[in-house]
Image 1 (cartoon, one colour):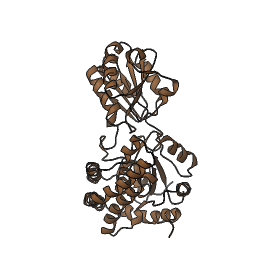
Image 2 (tube, rainbow, N blue to C red):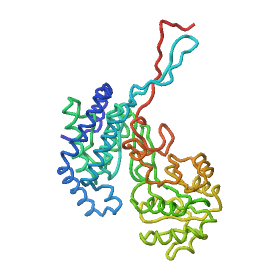
Image 3 (tube, rainbow, N blue to C red):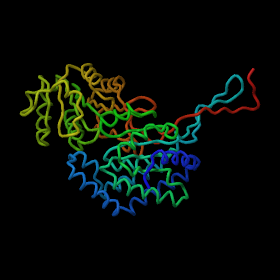
Length: 416
């Protein structure tokens, strides 16, 4: 029997009523059972993942994509731990805030409620299957997960763990639907199902996100790319700056919170640039340098306008010397993607000013951009990182997958 995405979306809509009615305790028990199922089924999941990796190698996936695709025992333990952390968090659903009594006598407040049915369209990363499902369940939503063909075996194996837990609790499997057909036409149809899908979250390359944003009839949370900047201020501790640069650029290059551009204050460039050049050379990082910085590097290429916009996702970085913090902020405003920006400085006022005026989803002082991650920021996991401001901005946890309704409490009042 062929798969019907419209039927799957309709079933998800009906099933969303089940998950929306669960208590916090019931949802948390469900999540912990999913975490246990992941660990119990690790051998089967890794066999499925190896099929995807073999197919990826034969089809020419690059190293960054293969790294995103790969699962191992440690990564699965990390995914299960993230689900446990989500279960341990407070439940956003049903939370009532800002109750106020009006002159009429009625009391007015707002209550957090689930969005309903969320669709995820994503590439390569099988961990998204679990992160998205867990966060949607925590927030009382059903979810339709359309992963890429490169991770199909892994995603279906992970889905079996989720459905094992749902079945144990007598819940409809349609609460979490993993689309088994990677055909692009299925994705195209999914984006038209506005009667049953409330929100689409694409997660992957810029091309995928632009395609979804331009073709969806359903509201879309956007995260085009992560052009993350590190600004080394004139009063920076240079050893801290070097460590933050090394961690941000070289620890894991194929992720959106890795550094892509280094901005250095002109007064510390003579001291810091040789340190940075030596470290980057050790990792064979390709450098695209401005006129004022190229002389510090042996094999740097001259930076072009395109380099300032680039999300390399590789051992590659753009470097620029700037006159002051104002120039650094101007560069970020012009070329940034609204993801994550970092200042390294021992000047408290400068750090405060940078954090206040830089308008990105995550702004840091004296910490690696690699912390720009839902798990590291206390969300347990993230369903995505929004670089658009409606209705969420930055890493999105369970609360970002809810909305608010007005509640009115009265004692027989009528409007005069």
